[in-house]
Length: 223
Image (tube, rainbow, N blue to C red; front, side, top):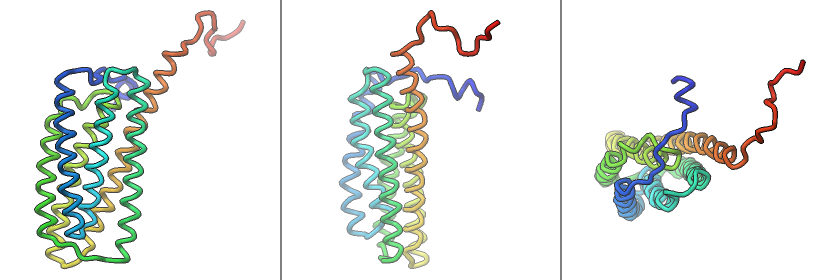
């Protein structure tokens, strides 16, 4: 990736009636799936499904924040993205800790129900990611929505694989390993969003406090 690509600020800030409608649909999908996976995770005793349910909840709340700050200043939008990064990081840490705990408890998940719910969740996230695909190159606030939906779909594929391995091995370890991997994915996504949001916050501060015209550049050499 070139230096120009890394430093160029994205242009799309979410101010679009089409994007707002898409975001409302995605929020509704995530809210419904949170309820479905919360119950399924409890009934199947699957740590991976419970982690995915928490992710659906986080997405519902943070996407609502994304919708609320559309049209506001860059500082507001970058601040919202930064908050979402912190929330995603907190979810990742929680899942990591719960997975470590379950490693010592070693409850056996029910693999067939686990896999079936994971397929439903995958369909929901693929639909969401497909709707958001054309808006993936926006500012930190817009981009964070795309990244979360894409990562969720990847996580669902992993949960389906874990369900199959649990059925084959009669062991809870595949479920726990996938839950740990999802926690790492949460933390990685939080880092990517936070880095971009921090850059946009710095840019917003620079716009608010420009250098006075009569201040000489710091690299100007005196004679």
